[in-house]
Image 1 (tube, helix red, strand yellow):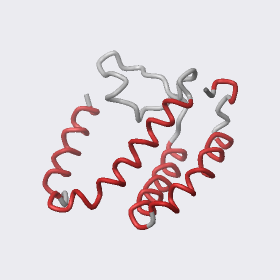
Image 2 (cartoon, one colour):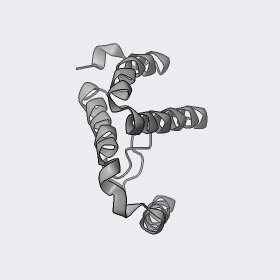
Image 3 (cartoon, rainbow, N blue to C red):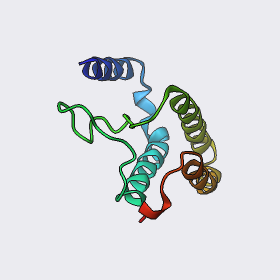
Image 4 (tube, rainbow, N blue to C red):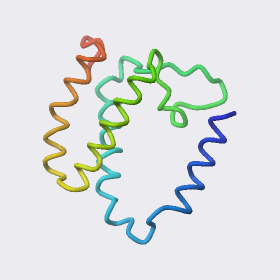
Length: 118
């Protein structure tokens, strides 16, 4: 239930505080983030990176719940992802170059099984 409350609260805050007049300025970075999520799902289609334990929510709704994930991983990942999104907003091509090196590093550090990569 707290997921629903959290999502409603998040949408409400975004609606009130969002810079909706300048959405076009942020659109390429939003697409960059969405493309990264698509690539991750494509590369690891044979291996689930997380397991869903709630019968009430779908894959699309709770993609942020990873099995075996801990608070330290989440903190580091959130810091890196927001730094990367800011970098993409300022220097898009450089951010794309950085991602090429971050993906193998992420795979190595989290010990994802390479035999499941497409």
